[in-house]
Length: 143
Image 1 (cartoon, rainbow, N blue to C red):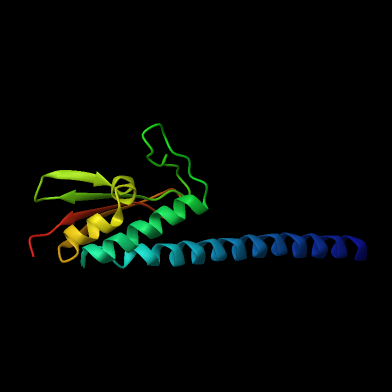
Image 2: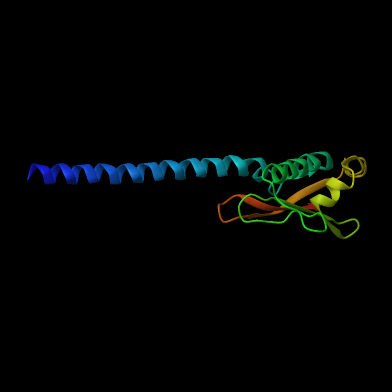
């Protein structure tokens, strides 16, 4: 009888330990996702100038490079559902949408000189299956 009680207690402790470890993993993942999203979420529905937009583009490109996101034949990052970030910039003065790669590869200095004092609003953010930001859309404002 003692043996059965010890076995049941041991199994209970093992099962509880497994659940606790899974819970800790979940909390760590959630914390990492929140920390990651914070660097982009803070811009949602806010106006920023062209210089700050270039900083965000640099951050997204750096993220994609660090996570070894591949590029297609046009030089655009290939989206995945875990680690990639894509940014589109809608220019209302010329009614055209640029992707971040075009601006990044087309000399950021030119963009800064042309759009330094122009404001952009983050209008859309999409999340991947892990809850991380995967897409951000900025629109040029009329300020």
